[in-house]
Length: 488
Image 1: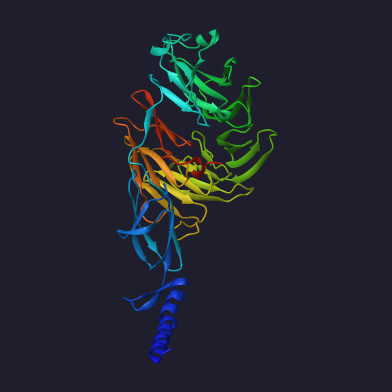
Image 2 (image 1 turned 90 degrees about the vertical axis):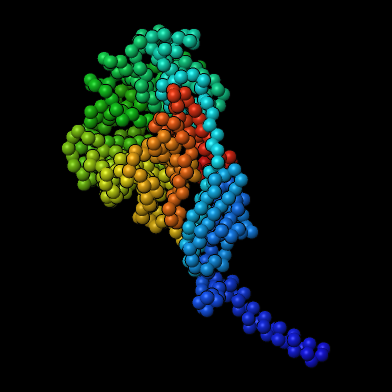
């Protein structure tokens, strides 16, 4: 080999080992040389996941080669403008901060279709309805003026019907027998509807100007069982209807007493001997707050054995009721009569911590790690558990996801447990939670001239009434069931 060839080879090798190799090693170690500052700076990683996958990624308006899901490494510490685009979907945009030696994740991005599929469920006028817990059936009230169109119904009052959302079959539920028809008259109204025991029965009330009557009705295939009339132990109405998985039972309060109406035994019994000011059900337990002194208890519905959870720093005056809120995993929150929200440890002698004031409603997500609550300022999420990536909320932190002083209707968690649905004015909205910066909020449906009193079901369907007609909107956005966070 000639001398100048050896010299060129030596210089090339020297360049590789002294210049290129350190750059490669430093890059692999999470560093980059900043020519502007003339120093080595640590780099960060950006993780992007979206549904649908395959969305185009733009960072500071520059399109990336990768598509979602993507891990983009070697980013200098800075604030970046991110944009995702996919055909048929609205663009997603957000500013995020990337820090050195940290992973910044936006891994719950939901791209919203430009058009939401809406369809009519029933071709007749209805007054109210309720969707079963499994999402397969609904019951609805047909106004009295149209009840006479079907055989076997009464022309003098409203009627209650069962409709299968899968088979599109309907069946008259009430009145069906002679004694049931006598309950309804021209001034009767079938009011509150409550599904029982995962859809195996229903409770409802029939009211007139002079009285109100209550019924439990099983929904077997044959439909031969009659309704059981629940006669309140005392005069007056009953409230705080709830159901459990322990049987075809209706739990209710009358005054300060908690009762259980059992369809199987056709009986009514008092569940708790103490006067109480609020209760909630979880599996085979009832949680309740006594009045004097105000103490939170847990009682086994089968054995009657009770456990004291916590003495509560609230007043024990009558007249108003506390709201107990439970998660599926047993986390406990309480809204007292002064609208103060408390978080309570579900263990004997548990801690009682105040969270916020002027709270109107609260709802845990499925994991029990986040608590959504509503105030006059809007919707706030309290994080009980800490995230593991940059920008993820810390345990004990709060996030104002909807800042709105007007009425917010029916806030609830979307099936992925990272978005929230709510109604306002004449629209239904969806908003993000948990990411950096301001959450993206999208209008999904507009119901002109009517308040969006919608019912959302975990099968990603929204049901709503418009001019006394029932409609269904598909919010699955084409997602396969295996991708939905709340599915098993």
